[in-house]
Amino acid sequence: MLLLAVDTATPAVTVALHDGSSVLAAESQVDARRHGELLLPAVDRVLSEAGVGVGLGAVTDVVVGVGPGPYTGLRVGLATALAFGSALGVPVHGLCTLDGLAYASGLEEPFVVATDARRKEVYWARYADARTRVGEPAVDRPADLTERVAGLPAVGAGAFLYPAAFRDARAPEHQSAAALAGLAAELLAAGRTDEFLPPLPLYLRRPDAEVPKNYKVVTPK
Amino acid sequence: MADEPLVLGIETSCDETGVGIVRGTTLLADTVASSVDEHARFGGVVPEIASRAHLEAMVPTIERALKEAGVSARDLDGIAVTSGPGLAGALLVGVSAAKAYAYALGKPLYGVNHLASHICVDQLEHGPLPEPTMALLVSGGHSSLLLAPDITSDVRPMGATIDDAAGEAFDKIARVLHLGFPGGPVIDRLAKEGDPAAIAFPRGLTGPRDAPYDFSFSGLKTSVARWIEAKRNAGEEVPVRDVAASFQEAVVDVLTRKAVRACKDQGVDHLMIGGGVAANSRLRALAAERCERAGIRLRVPRPGLCTDNGAMVAALGAEMVARNRPASDWDLSADSSLPVTEPHVPGRTHVNEPDRDHGHGHGHGHDHDHVHELAKDNLY
Ligand SMILES: [Zn+2]
Image: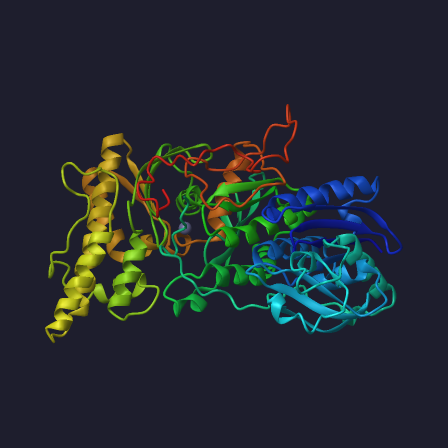
């Protein structure tokens, strides 16, 4: 088993290579505006760091964080993962980005994961423990969540951004593809492949139906 | 000719997910998935809807193109992708997919210019482009006159619209006439039954002191809309066919007049017309007539190659390979305002490159000083 995991649903551009028992190489860069530029060079570095004989051709599965996350960046990881899957002829497994953060937390008590959804909202979900999400991820204003998350530890940048709602913010703040790959490796080893999500984005919001002033035209400054 | 470069091209700058495959100047596959129907009820392309549709269509369209061409991805000599100009989020889907394909297959990647691709596509129809070529690009997003001494390295803006694109004017007038979106085909059809001389609509920027190669369609748009409104206010029936014909005539008269003049002034004896509006039958007819009279050879690709498609990107990519132009780097970005003067985005030379991850991250140091970008709301 050789898993290549990528996730660009949050400000982190993160890549990992996992052989089923451990992470061979991984890297993360936090830069919310350059996902498109950063991802492929990161994949390239991770592959060369993993060492001789571990080329992209040896990858057996591609794992991708499907969000929820701000759309433009989110699509970079998905388009990349889907194209890898097609070019290499290997399956592409989707995982909820929040599940990666939950898995990385290692918590064994109930908690929440919250990431920044911009527009003063968070993407969030509740967990019974690091491997067990309770319900579907959602997007909400932190102020509207205060009661529902009261007393629960909270993982992810959304928790750190809104301390009034999330009083007990915990690490990790950022998503790591290494955690996502670790989770995927567990599912694959246990044959629980039906728990993967289709490699399609979790937008959770309808698109803003705004036609730019000169639609069709694209307008640089 | 098996030694000609086999290139796959990806185009996602607007609402069409296009993938084309060419061998040299021979078209092998041209597949398109369009999200145009999803935009119709908004009266224009909604960027987020386009981006979502691109992501869903991207890989299936690539696989369909490979199948249609009957080639193996392993045999490709390169992968080309529109890196700009276009809608940023839409471009990014194509660029990300192209990079991953190229990387996974171990093929060179060519980020190319959408406008240069529109010109280069004619090689698939009429063989190698003469050098230089004069090109008139007209669509919902473009209205440009370009001189291309070398389509892979030297494209010069001669003129451009200072306000609306020509195709946009068609869409707007179609909307005022309640004809739906997009407006080009329906106006073209109705105009055939109307009188182009029925109403004297203005010809923008055609005065002796106006910029000889620039276009303006905003005044025409307003004038037509006002004329229709006046008829309606007077309780009279709007002669839709005559309005369509007279409006269309005003647009194509200016376009062809300026294009032919640019050819004459520059001593160029070839004119190519590309972009979605090049499908307009009256534009083709009038251009043919005026070119013939001026001794200019007109080249217009078939309508399917005039609108945005992947074949045009593949065509330019193949030319990049054929002329040994440097490939792009893996950090190629989508550049929504890539200037027309940059036919492709070459990788940096890998010498003296102390900190490539610093700064804005564009692989090319252009300063977006678009000489012909007279109106800030327009592209070129
Ligand atoms: Zn175009």
